[in-house]
Amino acid sequence: MSTRMSIDPTIFTDEPMLFLPEYVILRGGPVTDYAVLVHNGKFTDVGPATELQFRYADTKKIALPGACLMPGFIDAHHHLTQAFGKALAFGEPSEIFKRIWVPLEGSLTEDLVYLAGKLAALESLRGGFTTVVDAGTRAEGDLAPLAQAVTDAGLRCVLGLICNDKGGGAPTLQSHQILQRAEKHLANWQSKSLIHPSLAISIPEAASNDMLYSVASLCHEAGVVFQTHVNEHLSSVERSIIDKGLRPLEHLHSVEALGPQTLIAHATLLTPHELRLIKETDTAIAYNPVATLWKGNATAPATSMHELGIRFGIGTDSTRSDGFRLLDAAEAAQRLAFGIPTGDFSTGGGWPWFDHATSGGAEAISLENITGEIAAGKAADFLIIDINIPEFHPSRDLIWELTRFGNRDQIMGVFVAGELRLWNGWPLDWDARSLMREVSKLVNDAIEQAPIKKLHPTSTEHRKLFQSYRKT
Image (cartoon, rainbow, N blue to C red):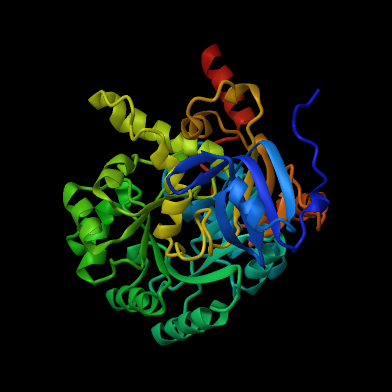
């Protein structure tokens, strides 16, 4: 028999609601006997339960025994239009964007962009993410279908527009056209509640020095994020040294493209000098531990970044959209790469990975004034987590337990801007299974028609090859 509390999700409405969970996770950690008031899409009061129940005696109260109220996870680096090709990347060598992602995204119609975006948004919400940062798509056309998809799903999104002027799979335009398009993108989405505009350059070598500077400057002036992939693979670092005499991150610094507006994805291959540049310029990082495990050349020194006070969030890189497994991977990758060789058994102490996946992630993507924590005035982006399970009994250290034991199946409710988006893994206001059927019907043909070049066989083919080798 299930021990999960029985709640009719229709109880969650747009009227003021006073939540009374067993735990509330605040910026400083978990607290008990606390209440949270949600109204008009925001947290309007947070404090001791007895005080808030007295203060809001006539407000609807929602008791949540055996549950934890925590901030929604923030995915600091995603590629929403890669949702159709996730399994295509398994076993592939580095720089798969050239052989898989650019061809796949470039073949998507507007309808397929919408379907990919909504499927990715559904996966993100199921994994406890209430905000994702999309690094930009190579699909033709504007970003309206993608923005509509995530909005329809109810996901908060930092929406990147690629501004390459030297290729990299983006549409080829003149420099002035790219900048006009960038300014239009920033203006179009500034007032949209769930869409936050951003500009991106795929990798530094895909843009001229003038474009790198101009796009970073536009973002700085607008107070939005400038995104780029940097120091991810050894081959790209070597190309930069050969072409520019500088490593990619040094190249960005040389053209004044680093700064508080800049979000560097991956940053796995960093020298001490580059770490200093990141710190001195207040540049932010998107640490992608699952991408490291699946396809990376190295592990970003995230524990050192944390100690140095470098801003960073944690991203999926469109690998798997599961917030709790992302926490586990973030800690495990650090322990394997840095903790074990140095005898560091704590590797951060558990809590940094939770923080950088929530409040620290919000700071890294310049949305700290909007989301990332349960605090009065912030958007009500939060999760209801069932902690009345064997793995959490006896509970001795909730943050460590969530980091290492947490599971997507524990997520009961996902709320974005105060609205219930998913209950027990599924939306209540749209048909997710119908979306899945439509994707299955349309997408395989699109994949087959795209000029994708896979180097690694499927698992079934690999098994046959392995067995044939053993016979010889």
